[in-house]
Image 1 (cartoon, rainbow, N blue to C red):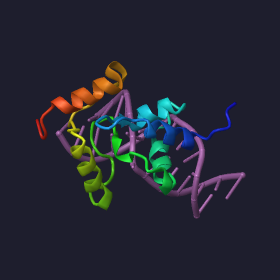
Image 2: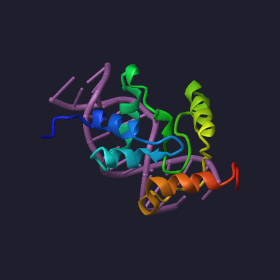
Image 3: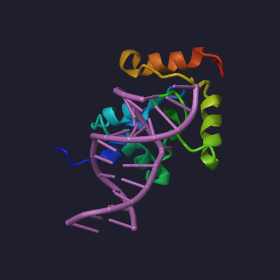
Length: 116
DNA sequence: AAACTGACTGATC
DNA sequence: AGATCAGCCAGTT
């Protein structure tokens, strides 16, 4: 049946992202069943029940960067969590379609920080 | 019920 | 590279 909400599907997908890996909002949306609902993912994450303890920080934008506004206190938090897991954010775009999860994580990790 | 809102994206300039 | 725009879609107003 189709009774589970997109929101819940998102939580399940995010809960399954392994440490050291990242997915984009669009990728999570697609895995959750709605390929064009990237924007909904952010809302779903913000609404996740506290007891779920999701690795919300493993979701970044397709540009390979953090989407949370710089002025938000969560921006720095997400950056720390990712760096603690060995994930280095790229400045350029990530080709998710072609590389998939592991490929994306590998690419993210072999690029040195702040590379032009 | 109609409008508004985003932790988005891809295209375009 | 950075700014702007138009689609996107369900939860909130």
